[in-house]
Amino acid sequence: MSPKPSAAEVKAKLIEAAIRLLADGGPEALQARKLAAEIGASTMAVYTHFGGMGALVDEVAREGFRRLSANLGGVQETDDPAADILTLALAYRQTVVENPQLYAVTFGQSQPNGQKAALGDMTNEETRQNLSEEGIVAFSYLVRAAERVIKAGRFRPAPEFAVAAQLWSAVHGYITLEVAGYFGDGENGVEQILVPLATTLGVGLGDTLEAATESVRVSIESWRANEGNIDT
Image 1 (tube, rainbow, N blue to C red):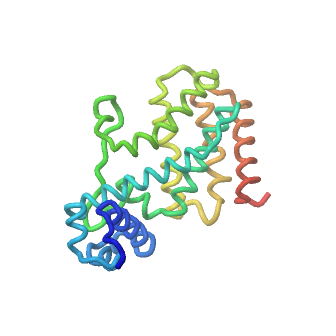
Image 2: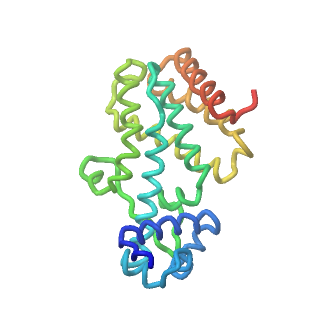
Image 3: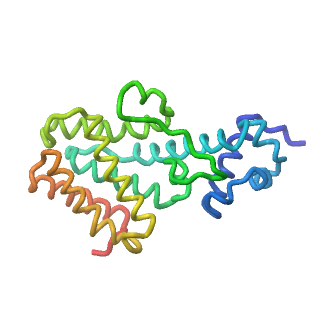
């Protein structure tokens, strides 16, 4: 007889099942009955291990941030911190494109069964403490990138958190629109929107047009070579 799975194992299976259901059927598919069937358990398992669907949705969102952090953490820092910002943006984009339903829940854009993931105000130090640790870790990659580019003298002096929040707003806004289909198929939006946006942001934050253009070129050419996402 197989040993009875631990509570942690059951919770992990439920979270993975929730992510599969989201990917296959969208937020409407995320139901306690379907979750239980996915792992061969009773519906009560959802309530025993999470207390309800609301807490499960929060855990799904935390897993979304963990996966985002894993991909952002895979971006190697180079001697061009401005180029690294676009490389992070491309890693962020790829993460969301591969599982848009998960990230719609993670960022509160989707509410399965009326349940919205708990979010928090990131605009000041006190309220940031209320955010999930996973969300803070994901955002820290952008804060680190902002700090590096400011120290390098490429962006004008400013609080790195504020700069990171501006970068996040622009990148996340672009990705949300791309995933919704507003920029066409494939990587058309990367070429037509994201690349020039990266240059515009760099100049707006204090870089020279020449330096920003060169950093964007370095980053996007590396992405093309490694991913082969854009025909040249």
